[in-house]
Amino acid sequence: MTAQAPAFDPGDFRRALGSFATGVTIITTRDGDGEPVGLTVNSFNSVSLNPPLVLWSLANEARSLPAFRDAEYWAVHILATDQEALSTRFAKRGEDKFSDLDLERGLGDIPLLPGCSARFQCRTASRYQGGDHLIFIGEVADFDHSNNPPLVFHGGRYAHATQRVSTKPGEPYLAGSFGEDFLGYLLGRSHFRFFSRIRPYLEKAGLSDEEFYVLSAMTLKPTMSSADLGKLTAGVLDETSDRTVDSLIARELLTRETLADGATCYRLSDRGREIALELISAAKAVESQVLAGLGPDEDTVLKSLLNQLLGVLDPDVGSIWHPDDPRGSNA
Ligand SMILES: Cc1cc2nc3c(=O)[nH]c(=O)nc-3n(C[C@H](O)[C@H](O)[C@H](O)COP(=O)(O)O)c2cc1C
Picture 1 (spheres, helix red, strand yellow):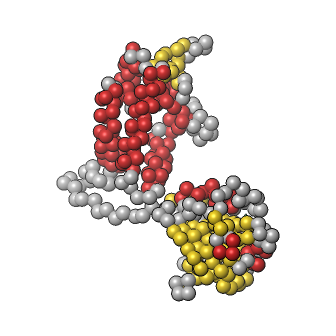
Picture 2 (picture 1 turned 120 degrees about the vertical axis):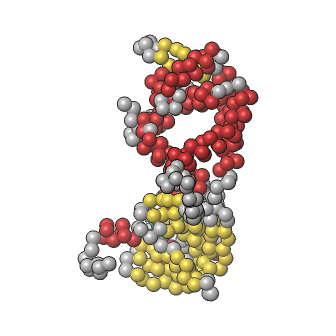
Picture 3 (picture 1 turned 90 degrees about the vertical axis):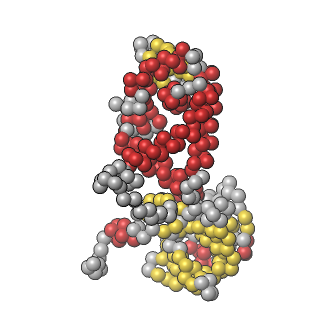
């Protein structure tokens, strides 16, 4: 690694710093008028266990600087993964950041936010000027923590923290055979095992897998054009698609209409909607049971990755779920 030239590019410096993944905190206090003050901070770090010390740094140009400079107490909130919107709100300059928030009161009346991964209430121990930031060291006077998984910041974007699992794939009988490391095997087996828990509900409703697929697709929009339904069934039902639609129409769960421009569209009947909603809620209950077996926040990570994978394998289908998303292709 070569030494950096003294006049390096600030943007590049920022990007290099961004490769250090951090949590995200909101630090709060009260100003001289007793008004709550706070901002989003990821320069937080632990310093010492005994005495218990933490640090963070505040930009010289921050509006909240005078309040923190004069404050005896401040609170560090380690944000949970579902608090990204709160982080964004507190990263804005001087807005009314606390409106509508359910605040608790801490030492010296500092405002405390609920729902975090952890909170540290600190008394200012020392301050140091560090270039264009003021470094605060605080002695922790009180803290609390929860099981809420933390929000992560990395490379200038919010991220998820999931713990690594070291699995050693078994030795396959044939070198290179379809083992635990093969995406097709993982997706295929997961699909079959997952669906086998939903199928009893379909059988009770007298529906085939294909009929359930079309019914659930029909819950995406009140009126589905045959083109959109074609996109949703393409590569999944194909030859059986027309037969499945006809069977649902014959059972009066679906209606077919011809629009003024001659295009065909479909709608769920009242009974069709009722059955679809019942089955979806049963399927969601199965989903909750299955996902409860994963670690905190891993369900969100799994869904996010599968959505990305679908975007690669089936880019057209996203335009039906998100018609206004410019990334979706409506071609
Ligand atoms: C993830 C993230 C981390 C941040 N970390 C810091 C930080 O450590 N120190 C800082 O002064 N500003 C940091 N900021 C920027 C402040 O939150 C932002 O400038 C805020 O508007 C300051 O509010 P104020 O001007 O009302 O004090 C961060 C912003 C984000 C989104």
